[in-house]
Image: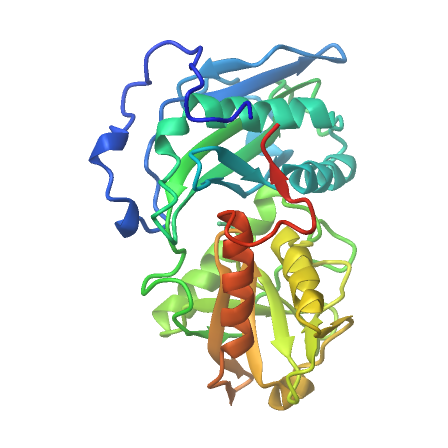
Length: 355
Ligand code: COI
């Protein structure tokens, strides 16, 4: 495989500020930035993509760049893992490329050809391969952060005439303090919505995350680890968590239920977990989910690249508290997904990318 540990990197020295990978304690990583050696950048100008360049993670862009003012900016999140034989697998990157292009179409940015996207993630991983945690570090991965934005200078509102697509990376462990699978409490913000029905909620647009900073911070101040958003039109349907999708397990444990809505970011992890749930004989329902139903579920969990499956112990909605004391299915699917990622369970669905 081209991602084997013996590959020579082509870039010059590590950027100033990069952490020495030999100094890292892989079992103690949380979800905080560990500066790595380099980022991989492509530029788009006059209808053409440049060759990739390895650069320090500090960019020089115009003050007038579209993304600074008008927010033509999309990102992605995916992970790379070290397998037992030392090879590195990037997990399902084609799905991230497809999703970034959903956003590109909506924000009127040129679509990124899949070969450019895959070359970017591959080069970033090869250059930073010393930051891929060893196979023995169970909860750890190299988190890849593709970023795509309007870089051309302008003052009138409209699409940029130049773009940058990049891939950066940082080693990570569990997203929430307390580790993977430690149940957390959620609250539905009453004063804030995440996304309008026909807005950009289904895109991984930077602005969706800016809109969440205040509600999430308020939720934490009130003692909840995560915010759970309602639909903006009626506030009676479940949409998604601050950084991740919503999954519920029916009372009889037979069905994996996840909301369908035009303003939800379509989680790739959710789609993969749905497949693994079906492999385990569960039914999968993707349909509108009413807050009225919260009483009937046996389990609720948050799913995403960063959180994997994070069990929810309670949901506070309009002063009512719904409690969940089981996380059996969340744990089973967590093990199934992370076992496939680490190569200790068969990759039936073809998610490993090692080419
Ligand atoms: C991810 O889970 O990869 C995301 O992009 C969410 C982010 C807020 C950490």
